[in-house]
Length: 561
Ligand SMILES: [Zn+2]
Image (cartoon, rainbow, N blue to C red):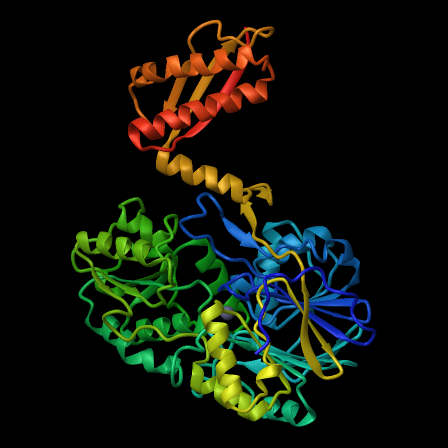
């Protein structure tokens, strides 16, 4: 297996006629999926998503792929192909289009509707090109064919990219539900046909590669959802991803069957379900869905609400209901249905919400106590089928953390792919397909780019370290008036502390230490403010640690007296 070596540096020029593949996100992480293909001087981007921050990244809204490798080459991008409408595949598009708004954005009908709505919020009107399964379309030197795949959002596409260097098949996110709600199954006949023609490189979704067997069908959730709607004594409040059209279809069907009216709650839920029903992806019987205010006169057992917040996001409707910070007051007899996954890292937040709702008397049904969720990704059994059907010459697992990529690589090898032709790359690793063989040839920058409010890229690892220190240790500001000529203190320094101690008297003990340190500096002729500030930081840090075993963020301010 070809592995990423840590000593990789900038790649040599791509041999003429070769195909270069660089993932700027999605390898070694779940999220911000983005793969860039380079061929004959042109670039093709497949997906451009965001990653959601974890608790150790406070204040960060989303994390983008690092575009710096292609920043100077935006003019060479022939198109952005979007495999489906999930945030981790489309969320970064507005930021890429800021650099060049007229890059053609290619995707299926639903995917384009979702990205267009998102771009409208960023005041960008994209140049879109709608494609569907079976269509073939050329963008510069990239001849793309689109293949239907089944996933946890409708209208997903895999893309086969034919170039003079060979053919790449990229699955996007997919699973192989044989009985999906829209009867649109992953087109294995097309996979087989492309395999017959010869797939030189197969990029395969790794998310569930560690899960043995097969992902169960979405339809198998029907009994559990139906039971909730049949037996709930009062309101039913469903929380799900705002993009999971088929899950919400199941909820609407159950509501219709049991005579409940439904209202959508939350901006993204209302917007996405509007788009999905306008385009015919969501079938809404007339009169079933009403406005929130129209539910008021109805008895509680005739009411259902569908909202976001299934991951415990603090600002989403469900968390706010749990905190009694929402017009919908949860009470005895209400039933909450969390029809969603439990994304690793969100567990604490979700259980906090479940506990909050339970405390107000609600009955919470979730994947831990009922069969109300199935994954959107192919398990190991399905992946093995794909390898055997496609018989690829080279394989590169995508979309997953290291353990997922590794498990997926092992599956490929078990089906007979030559281990030397299985590449495990991480973000930024350069893979070249030349003469039918893939090799790792270098590495480009692919770090995290943090979005915080309107600020893109301004927040660095150092600022996050400061934020963590502020949160955990507090801050101490030291204001020192010094004589400009001698560097000596003209009066005792002032202290301003937050999250450290409310009693400023504690700092009396450090004053003599600062005086001594600055006097020593004065004797050595140090008058430079920056140097004096560093002396104050060192002195106060040492004191705080020795005395209190604390490491507050020290902010020194040296002013000429
Ligand atoms: Zn997805």
